[in-house]
Image 1 (cartoon, helix red, strand yellow):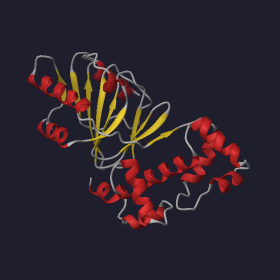
Image 2: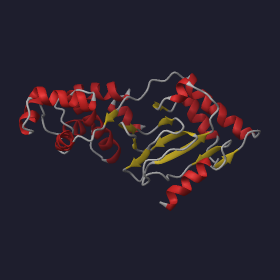
Image 3: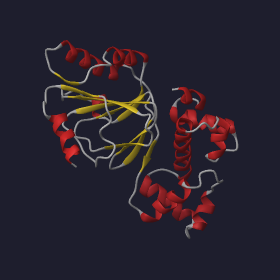
Image 4: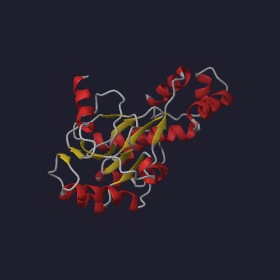
Length: 259
């Protein structure tokens, strides 16, 4: 907890500065927030950002914009992950900067990050580094990139969490709403209503996202080929797997593998 308090102190110690931190420091910390907005960039794996309402999945070569005073907790499950955090003071910018969102790292943003790759610590108004990083921030809202859309709603409903855990541990099986309802001692109508009222999503949509998330992990963490991964997460049709993967991630599995 001492490290946690130290991080918050560092982030908010100088309210007017832009702070750059390049080592991972948040993965074991409880939910927290800070007065500065946060640009978090992910390379080499998948990061998991938990909020009070949803779990967000941030793949390699993507970033997440976290508005100021937004409670969150970051986790990851690979040692190859490299993360850059840039904390920005409030400049009353709105719209794009008021919403949490995940986006791909564009060529322009990648070049700006490469130019500043050795920067670390606080940069203050009046310095050219501060102006450069402010321009980097302003670029984000101008690119009009499509949001990365995988986000799983969470619930404290014990019945639903038990069902989700059961599915998560057997993703290679052929699930149906009817079979899950019978195993859970519920009617199809009751289970459908439970997903809609507690998670605001259908059973089919939730299962699809669970499978694609697991596929993303297997692509990054194993040597399985795309066909093997498709079967491992419950797809017998490789074309359907590839199409669903692209629908949720904006890229084909083969593209995701080399990112």
